[in-house]
Image (cartoon, rainbow, N blue to C red; front, side, top):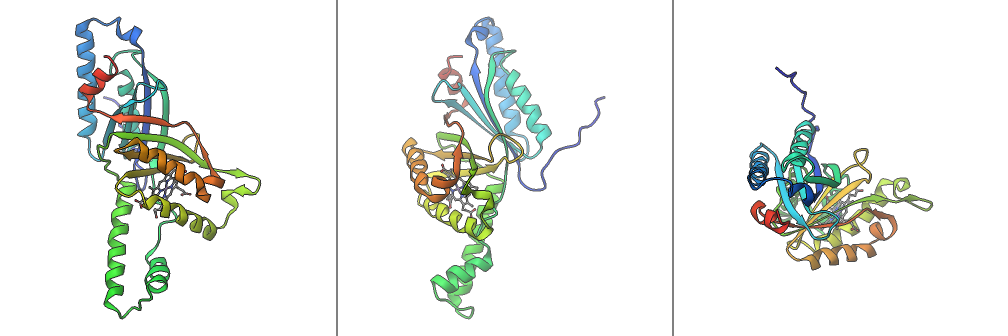
Length: 274
Ligand code: 76R
């Protein structure tokens, strides 16, 4: 009997793996047709097993350029489970058929800049709207805010991603150089800058679904940015517009960009000529 492994579940949130693979067609062509069929069944069953694991989600997509052929985004609480699924995914089509070309490890997180109820009362209800505690609109406004935030926080820590076709992923960090050192700004300055960022972001509501996951100490950059969209133009335009926002213009550094298209597995197999 194997020794039980202690789970590695964060106090809050889930682990997130973005996995990108090249398909080694020369290796694939060495398999007989029966072996190829069995390999595809194996991956199909593994995907079903992952998707039926509690609190676990898996996106499967074709990658738009030869940076990779296929990609997976895996969200699951336990890093031991994530690691085990990742090894099995890599081997699922047979040895050396899927060749890892890029990967990223991060965790879902709540934001340190999320507006608190106290801030909303001061800045918006009293400040912007001129309401006082006795007014019925005050209680209604506060409740509406708290419901929205509870929903938003739940989405950031425990997201369920829609099947929108476009999946954009890139990692990013905040700059630490000379006068442009994000980490030497005080909290209020950072919060104010992030508020500007969020204002731009909210204009894309319904067109862009963003998931920011934290990776400081876990991978090369400080965050993973996953954007889902129905139209690539919304990806291009949000990233462009944000370049002018001070948070990005002055403080952002980016890694490589990957564009994928979510597809059901059978279509994905056809797409990548397996
Ligand atoms: O209060 C909140 O949590 C919501 C406000 C918010 C935060 C704190 C928010 C809103 N983001 C936050 C944090 Mn964002 N975001 C990006 C990118 O390409 C670029 O220039 C940047 C990549 C996009 C496209 C984007 C979109 N955001 C962050 C952080 C963490 C910073 C930190 O903690 O220091 C990063 C790295 C980041 C990057 N952001 C939004 C969006 C969108 C679309 C929104 C609006 C979400 C909504 O209200 O539905």
